[in-house]
Image (cartoon, rainbow over all chains, first blue to last red; front, side):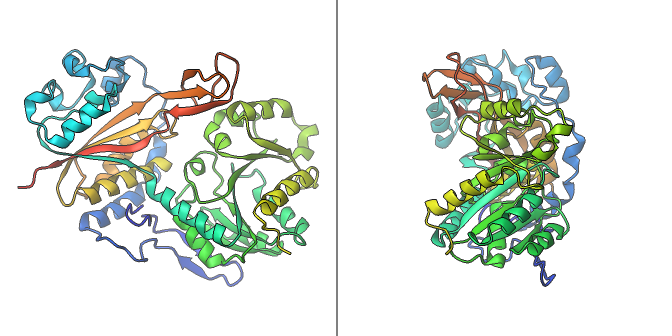
Length: 362
Length: 112
């Protein structure tokens, strides 16, 4: 993602209108930039994309045991200064020098002896964190204190979306789940059942195909498909472009069906009013504990496919207890999008959300 | 694989802020509850930095442990996961550290 405007390096993102079949490639870099893209920056875009599958080859274990020797062998030792609880690391530079693999590790034991520039000194002393030793540097260059949130640009764009939606009295919900939990079926039924009450529009996120947008369209709602290509989640700028293409009317509801994935979408705010996580009973009841970030980030859990419970060994109460362990405030609705069982409670919540901001379409 | 796009962000931020000077070292702070794996970031960093002004820079990652405050009794506790239970029995806790995802600083070559 370009950090100045928020446009991403994901050149492969496309928007598809399921009615016309028109495809818009979302270059995510073609809108106004108030800054210059240096040559180096452009290369960064190109270099980042083809590596999509590399990371998966790493079956990382949480291997940061206190065993420094083992860690050292793997070259993952940079992080370890932090595991030293004592804040007086200046004095101990040599005693745990083994934690640093880089060459300067023995040279920076004394801040004052090296003529650090003012910024660095101020930073090191002001922090008083136990990790301040790790911010130490020998005198090779200039230290620039950035203190910048890595996801700040996405957050900024999410807030912009939030403002855009609020200004139009639109309720936006971010639907998240694993693949196959029944998100699209749930949306189809919701659209059909509430068509007299709520104008629902849908932004569909998938890595590929416009199948879901076509299904939503057939159910009677306006839909736009965003294909993320290799991307595993929607980001705020994709939603902004999706909203532009969809043009949801004031007072309507926008359902954002995120890419099926219980990990990454939890980290990326899109500007929605709330995240709604869908968990189907054909999945493990311990999903909330396995993917706590998602369940913590969600305001509502829809436990779907309850019509299948007689055929499964799924302990509903235990699943809900796990979800509340992670997020004590989560609302839970047990539903079957197939049979319609339990859907009225979900609809009541949806209406209340829409009504709360005076958004019921008349 | 959100680490790839996050690392792409890191490299892009550093490349922009470096104003043309070669980046020698980048220091990140990644909370242990942030759902971002430092090892995956390290793995992606070299790939993302290639052919940029950040290429060849050392990557330092400070991992911040998770801490939470109990909303019932006010007690604080260490966390190794996004959730936990206070000694008082409550699961109603507020994470106060461990979600960090930030670039603390970077070191750039002196202008010639």
